[in-house]
Image 1 (cartoon, rainbow, N blue to C red):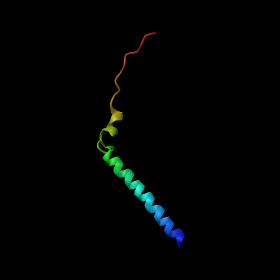
Image 2: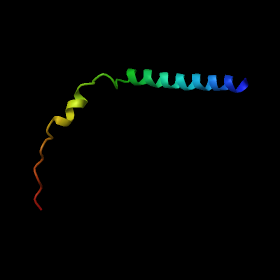
Image 3: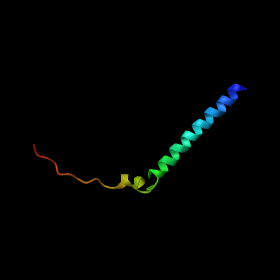
Image 4: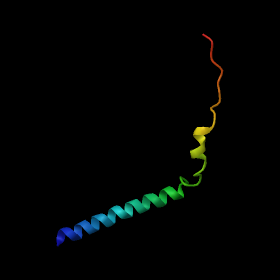
Length: 53
């Protein structure tokens, strides 16, 4: 019976850690712009002139 209570407490602790990490990531702005990373790969890179040796 003791091990079940310990496992429940550990699972609650892990769940609280993941909840805290999710709230932290939302507040830090990681989900503000969800559109531009998907199309960024389609944009052309800026071409830099080649250096002559």
